[in-house]
Amino acid sequence: MSFFKKRIKAEDVKQGGGTSYIVNSGVYPVNIIAPIVSVSKGGSTSVDLFINHDGQDQIIYGNLRISNNDGNENEIGTKIFNQLLVVSGTEEVADPVDGELPIGKKGAMKDVSVLEDLVDTEVLLWIQIEYGKYNGSITEKKVIRGFYQAGTSATAEEIVNESEAGIGYEKDSKYFDKVNYKDVTEADVTAWIAADRPKGTSGGGSKGGSKPSFGAKKKFGK
Image 1 (cartoon, helix red, strand yellow):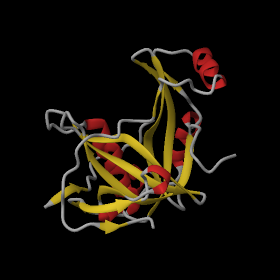
Image 2 (tube, helix red, strand yellow; image 1 turned 90 degrees about the vertical axis):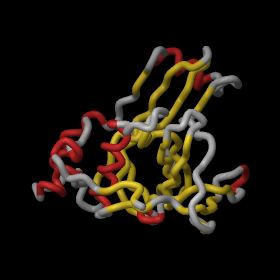
Image 3 (tube, rainbow, N blue to C red; image 1 turned 30 degrees about the vertical axis):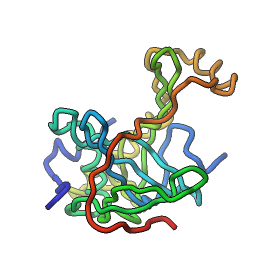
Protein backbone atom coordinates (compact mmCIF):
# COMPACT_ATOMS: atom_id res chain seq x y z
CA MET A 1 0.00 0.00 0.00
CA SER A 2 1.22 3.48 -0.81
CA PHE A 3 1.35 6.33 1.74
CA PHE A 4 1.93 9.07 -0.83
CA LYS A 5 2.86 9.35 -4.52
CA LYS A 6 4.79 12.20 -6.08
CA ARG A 7 2.77 14.80 -8.00
CA ILE A 8 4.12 16.90 -10.84
CA LYS A 9 1.22 19.16 -11.85
CA ALA A 10 2.02 22.88 -11.80
CA GLU A 11 -0.21 23.61 -8.82
CA ASP A 12 1.39 20.81 -6.82
CA VAL A 13 5.01 21.92 -7.21
CA LYS A 14 4.74 25.72 -7.17
CA GLN A 15 6.78 27.07 -4.24
CA GLY A 16 4.88 29.07 -1.62
CA GLY A 17 5.95 32.14 -0.94
CA GLY A 18 24.70 30.86 16.96
CA THR A 19 23.19 27.46 18.06
CA SER A 20 22.70 24.42 15.87
CA TYR A 21 19.15 24.22 17.20
CA ILE A 22 16.79 25.94 14.82
CA VAL A 23 15.41 28.91 16.74
CA ASN A 24 15.03 31.56 14.03
CA SER A 25 13.15 31.84 10.75
CA GLY A 26 15.33 30.87 7.80
CA VAL A 27 16.46 28.16 5.41
CA TYR A 28 18.61 25.40 6.86
CA PRO A 29 20.59 22.54 5.29
CA VAL A 30 19.37 19.48 7.17
CA ASN A 31 19.50 15.72 7.10
CA ILE A 32 16.10 14.20 7.67
CA ILE A 33 17.02 11.31 9.94
CA ALA A 34 13.45 10.07 9.91
CA PRO A 35 10.00 11.45 9.10
CA ILE A 36 7.45 10.36 11.70
CA VAL A 37 3.76 9.78 11.09
CA SER A 38 1.48 10.81 13.94
CA VAL A 39 -2.29 10.60 14.25
CA SER A 40 -4.05 13.09 16.52
CA LYS A 41 -6.86 12.23 18.91
CA GLY A 42 -9.20 13.90 16.44
CA GLY A 43 -8.00 11.63 13.64
CA SER A 44 -5.83 13.95 11.54
CA THR A 45 -2.54 12.60 10.18
CA SER A 46 0.66 14.64 10.24
CA VAL A 47 4.33 14.10 9.42
CA ASP A 48 6.87 15.29 11.99
CA LEU A 49 10.56 15.55 11.08
CA PHE A 50 13.44 14.25 13.19
CA ILE A 51 16.39 16.10 11.67
CA ASN A 52 20.06 16.88 12.09
CA HIS A 53 21.27 20.42 11.50
CA ASP A 54 24.97 21.17 11.84
CA GLY A 55 25.52 18.14 14.07
CA GLN A 56 22.51 18.73 16.31
CA ASP A 57 19.60 16.29 16.30
CA GLN A 58 16.19 17.91 16.84
CA ILE A 59 12.54 17.40 16.01
CA ILE A 60 10.04 19.60 14.19
CA TYR A 61 6.53 18.70 15.36
CA GLY A 62 3.09 18.88 13.84
CA ASN A 63 3.58 20.91 10.66
CA LEU A 64 2.90 18.73 7.66
CA ARG A 65 -0.74 17.77 8.07
CA ILE A 66 -1.59 15.21 5.39
CA SER A 67 -5.24 14.68 6.32
CA ASN A 68 -7.78 16.55 8.46
CA ASN A 69 -9.89 15.15 11.28
CA ASP A 70 -12.61 14.19 8.80
CA GLY A 71 -10.13 12.12 6.78
CA ASN A 72 -10.06 14.52 3.84
CA GLU A 73 -6.73 15.65 2.41
CA ASN A 74 -5.17 18.77 3.87
CA GLU A 75 -4.29 20.85 0.82
CA ILE A 76 -1.50 22.96 2.33
CA GLY A 77 0.22 20.11 4.15
CA THR A 78 0.16 17.71 1.21
CA LYS A 79 1.48 20.38 -1.16
CA ILE A 80 4.52 21.01 1.05
CA PHE A 81 5.05 17.29 1.67
CA ASN A 82 4.95 16.74 -2.09
CA GLN A 83 7.73 19.33 -2.45
CA LEU A 84 9.85 17.12 -0.20
CA LEU A 85 9.32 14.13 -2.49
CA VAL A 86 10.20 16.09 -5.61
CA VAL A 87 13.35 17.80 -4.29
CA SER A 88 14.62 14.54 -2.76
CA GLY A 89 13.97 12.53 -5.91
CA THR A 90 11.48 10.23 -4.19
CA GLU A 91 8.79 8.78 -6.43
CA GLU A 92 6.52 7.29 -3.80
CA VAL A 93 6.43 6.77 -0.03
CA ALA A 94 5.24 3.47 1.39
CA ASP A 95 3.18 3.16 4.54
CA PRO A 96 5.17 3.73 7.74
CA VAL A 97 6.89 1.02 9.74
CA ASP A 98 7.14 0.80 13.51
CA GLY A 99 10.47 2.11 14.74
CA GLU A 100 12.28 3.77 17.61
CA LEU A 101 13.93 7.17 17.81
CA PRO A 102 15.93 8.86 20.60
CA ILE A 103 13.36 11.61 21.11
CA GLY A 104 12.15 10.77 24.61
CA LYS A 105 13.27 12.37 27.87
CA LYS A 106 17.08 12.68 27.98
CA GLY A 107 17.32 11.00 24.59
CA ALA A 108 15.43 7.87 25.55
CA MET A 109 14.20 5.71 22.69
CA LYS A 110 10.55 6.22 21.85
CA ASP A 111 8.15 4.18 19.70
CA VAL A 112 7.30 5.94 16.43
CA SER A 113 5.96 5.23 12.94
CA VAL A 114 8.65 6.01 10.35
CA LEU A 115 8.47 6.66 6.60
CA GLU A 116 11.50 4.63 5.53
CA ASP A 117 11.61 5.97 1.97
CA LEU A 118 12.58 9.42 3.27
CA VAL A 119 15.09 8.29 5.90
CA ASP A 120 18.54 9.95 5.64
CA THR A 121 17.43 12.63 3.15
CA GLU A 122 19.44 15.82 2.56
CA VAL A 123 17.36 18.94 1.82
CA LEU A 124 17.18 22.66 2.43
CA LEU A 125 14.38 23.26 4.93
CA TRP A 126 12.50 26.59 5.12
CA ILE A 127 11.31 27.26 8.67
CA GLN A 128 9.20 30.19 9.83
CA ILE A 129 8.90 30.94 13.53
CA GLU A 130 5.30 31.67 14.48
CA TYR A 131 4.01 33.12 17.75
CA GLY A 132 0.39 32.94 18.82
CA LYS A 133 -1.85 32.59 21.83
CA TYR A 134 -3.64 29.56 23.24
CA ASN A 135 -5.68 29.51 26.47
CA GLY A 136 -4.21 32.88 27.38
CA SER A 137 -0.59 31.79 26.95
CA ILE A 138 1.90 32.70 24.25
CA THR A 139 2.85 29.85 21.92
CA GLU A 140 5.93 29.43 19.77
CA LYS A 141 6.28 26.94 16.94
CA LYS A 142 8.40 26.19 13.90
CA VAL A 143 6.29 26.14 10.75
CA ILE A 144 7.61 24.31 7.68
CA ARG A 145 7.12 26.62 4.71
CA GLY A 146 8.88 24.61 2.02
CA PHE A 147 11.81 22.54 0.78
CA TYR A 148 14.61 23.11 -1.73
CA GLN A 149 17.00 20.64 -3.28
CA ALA A 150 20.30 20.28 -1.45
CA GLY A 151 23.24 21.49 -3.52
CA THR A 152 21.24 23.35 -6.19
CA SER A 153 18.58 25.23 -4.16
CA ALA A 154 16.09 24.16 -6.85
CA THR A 155 12.38 24.29 -6.06
CA ALA A 156 10.06 21.39 -6.85
CA GLU A 157 8.61 23.50 -9.66
CA GLU A 158 12.04 24.02 -11.24
CA ILE A 159 12.88 20.32 -11.02
CA VAL A 160 9.63 19.21 -12.63
CA ASN A 161 9.82 21.87 -15.36
CA GLU A 162 13.57 21.33 -15.83
CA SER A 163 14.08 25.07 -15.56
CA GLU A 164 17.01 26.99 -14.11
CA ALA A 165 17.65 26.06 -10.50
CA GLY A 166 17.74 28.67 -7.75
CA ILE A 167 15.48 31.36 -9.26
CA GLY A 168 12.57 30.49 -6.95
CA TYR A 169 14.91 30.33 -3.96
CA GLU A 170 16.17 33.82 -4.77
CA LYS A 171 12.61 35.16 -5.06
CA ASP A 172 11.58 33.53 -1.79
CA SER A 173 14.68 34.73 0.07
CA LYS A 174 13.12 38.08 0.98
CA TYR A 175 10.67 36.18 3.18
CA PHE A 176 13.14 33.80 4.84
CA ASP A 177 13.67 35.85 8.02
CA LYS A 178 10.01 36.76 8.47
CA VAL A 179 8.43 36.01 11.85
CA ASN A 180 4.66 35.52 12.04
CA TYR A 181 2.60 36.94 14.92
CA LYS A 182 -0.97 35.70 15.38
CA ASP A 183 -3.08 37.39 18.09
CA VAL A 184 0.09 38.66 19.81
CA THR A 185 2.42 41.58 19.17
CA GLU A 186 6.17 41.60 18.77
CA ALA A 187 6.37 43.52 22.05
CA ASP A 188 4.35 40.80 23.82
CA VAL A 189 6.73 38.13 22.56
CA THR A 190 9.85 40.15 23.41
CA ALA A 191 8.65 40.56 27.01
CA TRP A 192 7.71 36.86 27.22
CA ILE A 193 11.15 35.76 26.02
CA ALA A 194 12.86 38.22 28.40
CA ALA A 195 10.87 36.65 31.24
CA ASP A 196 12.30 33.25 30.23
CA ARG A 197 9.03 32.00 28.71
CA PRO A 198 6.99 31.71 31.92
CA LYS A 199 5.45 28.36 32.85
CA GLY A 200 1.98 27.73 31.57
CA THR A 201 2.84 28.76 28.02
CA SER A 202 2.71 26.35 25.13
CA GLY A 203 5.65 25.80 22.77
CA GLY A 204 6.09 23.81 19.56
CA GLY A 205 3.44 22.09 17.50
CA SER A 206 1.02 19.35 18.39
CA LYS A 207 2.70 16.02 19.04
CA GLY A 208 -0.42 14.20 18.02
CA GLY A 209 -2.06 11.27 19.76
CA SER A 210 -2.18 7.58 18.91
CA LYS A 211 0.07 6.11 16.21
CA PRO A 212 -0.75 3.50 13.59
CA SER A 213 1.15 0.21 13.82
CA PHE A 214 3.01 -1.16 10.79
CA GLY A 215 5.53 -4.02 10.75
CA ALA A 216 8.46 -4.72 13.02
CA LYS A 217 10.22 -1.97 14.97
CA LYS A 218 13.40 -0.52 13.53
CA LYS A 219 15.90 1.80 15.20
CA PHE A 220 16.82 5.08 13.51
CA GLY A 221 19.24 7.82 14.50
CA LYS A 222 21.20 5.81 17.05
